[in-house]
Amino acid sequence: MPDATSTGLFGSDWDLQTVLNITNAVYIVAAVLFILGLKRLGHPSTARTGNQMAAIAMLMAVVVTLIDRDIVQVPWIVTGVVIGATIGVVLARRVQMTAMPQLVAVFNGFGGAASALVASAELVREGNAVDDVAAISIMASTIIGAVTLTGSFIAFGKLQGFVTSKPVLLPARNYLNAVLLAAAIALAIFLVFEPDTPAAFAVMGVLALALGVLLVIPIGGADMPVVVALLNSYSGLAAAATGFALENNMLIIAGSLVGASGLILTQIMTKAMNRSLANVMLGGFGAADGAAAAGGSVEQRPVRSVSAEDVALVLSYSRSVIFVPGYGLAVAQAQHAVRDLADVLKGRGVSVKYAVHPVAGRMPGHMNVLLAEANVPYDELKDLDEINSEFDRTDVAIVIGANDVTNPSARTDTSSPIYGMPILNVDKANAVVVLKRSMASGFAGVENELFFLERTMMFFGDARGSVEDLVREVKAL
Image (cartoon, helix red, strand yellow):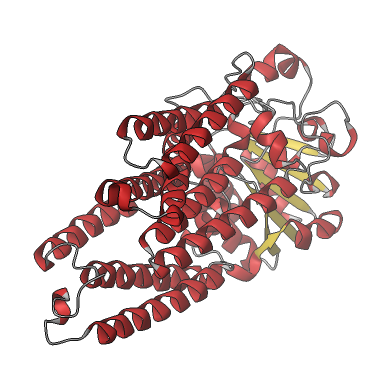
């Protein structure tokens, strides 16, 4: 902490207690903004302002912490803020929505790395003078932060295609992970009593980095949304541990909020997939793109292929339509075309809604953000529990790029890897139109029985082009 006569920007005439009061007051305001921002992220209509509130809170916390601790001079603070803000703005504007899960994974990794580096710097600064509580916090932050760093970048690689999305199942991988974790914890305990041992600290860090790779590499692409949510929680826990090491209340609060919300989101995701977290992390479930599983047997089964004119004719007689978006919609950037089709249908008196599954896309909320980008009314977005009872009263369900979350096998086939997963009851609609490029299966690598039902029409092609064709054909009728 600063002394009584030198307090950075606050000036030498400010006493220590005054500085502490000002700092804590700003921290309280920032904490409240964090909580309110997190609350507002719970609904699409308020998510944007919630994000802005949290960003302002983070800026306040960072600037006041740097000034309070007299860590660096003001020009360096301003330079860092400008550089960081510039990078953030460029990434936010240039990264496509289809790559947003990758960006979130990278942010998680950087968050974990920052916590580990700050904790490491505190250990170097204090040396043998560090107390036991701070030492424990430093070790926890370093291990969790290092695991988050490498685990997040493996997740990024799987999502981006740099690393195979198929599970990489090493022999005795779970035993190896257990040994690495035990060794890292043993070194951490040793370092609590002998903190000034750089070699042991370095080995502990390397073990944690390796553990992050080995924990995520066996997990398939189907489970990446859960992994990203869990790693987000890890980054928060690492930050909270660093907060204890630095005795910084704001960092403890912010890290705890991120850690808790990440764990809650992870629980929601696993529930939506009807699987336990242990099954996700240890099961080696999921395939890259389902191509291998789709194989020749998919093409040998008959499906009903239709044209834009056929679908437009069906839509012209409908009174209710439910759109079911999936990752294919994101890849094709078809959200604006879908909004145009919905507007045309609503102009003809058709009731339009959107069914959004919790794990549709590659991260939580992916579909909500895409549809919000196209200015789809928030009250038309329905989650699984709200919409499922309406499918049997719906004339047409239009599935755009969604696969596993609409597969009826999840209800009936006990041998299916997605058995028991809550799905959207698309197959109960009077008619189903599926927009896909091909018959390839989804990330789980299993055939979708929905495609072979009598009431299902397969409209093959790029989703955006297909929807634009539908808009023209419906207008022409």
